[in-house]
Image (tube, rainbow, N blue to C red):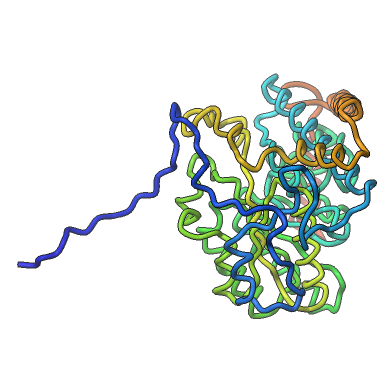
Length: 412
């Protein structure tokens, strides 16, 4: 007879369920400014503390402190604040549009605006981003027309994607925004491949890939890190850890046992864990990783520690799997409010100016929506012509596709 305990299987469970009292006291959140900023040629193993810690710049008094302070000028700070506020206003408008039946579904990035906006302000416009469906802030910060974004969500006659993509899955080569994949893990491997191609051609453009915490459990994540490490691909690999993969909490993907950034070290890549709700920290970490990539020092993995304040999509009810007040209890706060308070602390901003800017971006979004809806919505108006179904499939159309297009034209 064996004198040993019976085996048991560990099933990770979230700390809180609907109806529970929210308590984030278990999180180890270092003080702002304590993380050292190493040179960009640091070895991967020397970034261990940065992968297990948390890079923060804004302290409790809303001051920028520590070695990671990017020392941005006031104009840049205000530009970042405006882009984040415009992103949130756009999200709110499109959410209401979905509820009115004007599109099939929508996905908001509320609470995560700093991730996309700060990074887009570091990266060059022709650097290629391989985003998830919560990086609409990249397009907005780069000045992509809101009307075109709305046309895509509505799949109307002016949809740049000609009705072929799901809502919110934008794409624009001119703005360095690669087509979004619903299966997010593929964005990492594609970003690495694009970066390898850029380096192989002797170009000067780098890539940035984005996935969520849940996608780190997929094979694409590991394939991408292997190639990025072996070939020193000039790419920034962002893990947006917003705590939830639809209704599965981050522990299902292993986030309870070790930070996702720490997985980089096993692939001989530097890993940075960053306060994703701190605009300045996101900017500084991205700047460090971009400089490293442009210096032919290879890839960097960044875990952006944030929180998904809203549901996964308009088809999701987060109250079924987490407490309704959980978002309000998130200890790292709201990225827009934090940057707003930082500007006020600097003496260059006021509550009145914040209110005025809010009204301005809401009006800008309202006007864009009015213009986009002239082109149609899901429920009414014009759709992309069926004849466009043959466009953009082949660089050079083969004979059988040309013949099908001619047959369709004859029937029209």
